[in-house]
Length: 395
Picture 1 (cartoon, one colour):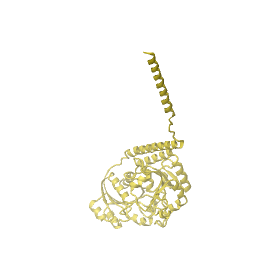
Picture 2: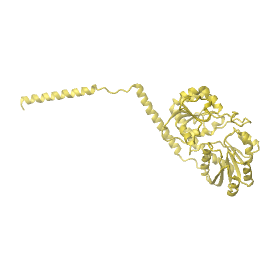
Picture 3: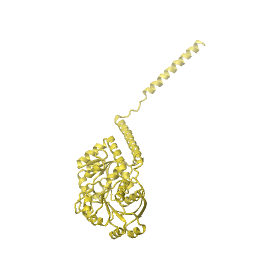
Picture 4: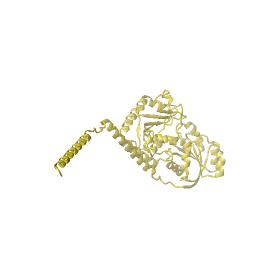
């Protein structure tokens, strides 16, 4: 190789090294995107929220998928008489009918517009069970009893209409009431077989959403604007709305001016149980505020029987997979443990305090949701209640 070639090769090598250094310098000089701390915190919070939601949905799905308690299938024939009231009672009728078919060998369904006495005479059921009973002729019930067929009535609205039910119960062999304080009231009327049978949740309707909610909510209330609810919410409604409250139910023009909180109050619309369950399940917290036993504008309870038992919504909310904060009634502790499977409040300030706490303590909220769901499915379904009813009647 000539001297000229060696020099030329050296020059080329130097040039290559110089170019490589230039490339490295250019790469090093290229600015690396930096995520602002606030934005990074938001991203991390979003990831954590997604993880928490997925974890909760997964565990609820496992709990809901477990086989329920096994109750005996009795070789009996039950004739079920629906309430005849339509919405919102018809979903209750449907849940009872489907559950009865898992507990009794034969179930015949009729309604108060039919000649129930004649139907019972022809079918000869072992039991005629009526829900509510307002529209079922007392003469039909008496005729059925005179034929030697047992009759039972499950009352759905105690103690709010005891002026009506006080006479109604006298025509049946067995009375079942969802209000503990009505048991002695009916016994004093002369009914020999009166039992406390609160309502429950029907898992065919009330169950957690399996997927992430399309329209998640912080806070929900579903129910009509009875005056005690209006008076309770009035002083704190703005605080609750600032925390993300949505309301569904009738008569809320008693509290809100037209157009107030657009998109947050859906009034004057009956919602089916599946839609209601979806609202509960898409909410971090559901408020449950019982109606008052002494609201004279809608009640027929001149005996002033105090309500101490949980409403059906108590069980339905817990079955739907959300944290329930309910106004305390003395009998609730016999169904759920406050602070463990449910939360309670006595004052509006206590409600606000607990809403704030659980909106900022996801782990604690989640564990109460899971324990409440588990206990509901273990103890508080229609199957549990109707099995109890049949035990009382047939032993």
